[in-house]
Length: 116
Image 1 (tube, rainbow, N blue to C red):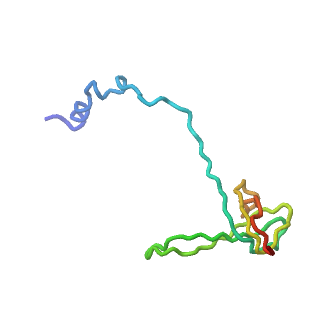
Image 2 (image 1 turned 30 degrees about the vertical axis):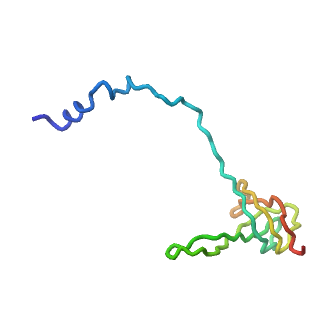
Image 3 (image 1 turned 90 degrees about the vertical axis):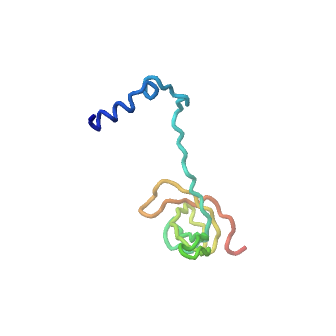
């Protein structure tokens, strides 16, 4: 009786499965790097810090058990160089490199002012 290792090698020793006889049909390409664009919109809820605003972003996410859509809110720290934002402004945030321990966004544009 043959051993298990001999059975395995003899089963796959056919000339059709050798890597030297198989050619790659797909041409080789350089790897493509796709960067995700972080772009969120929300309402300014705090302007108490210097050059930093807190923006609340609301999303609709399904409940785990009942699948009803629930409104969830997440707060982001964003860099505001000019310091011209007020509470209630609707802004668009753009992702950037880490600016501090919590700041990962900059204010890209003011969509709607609070007083208008």
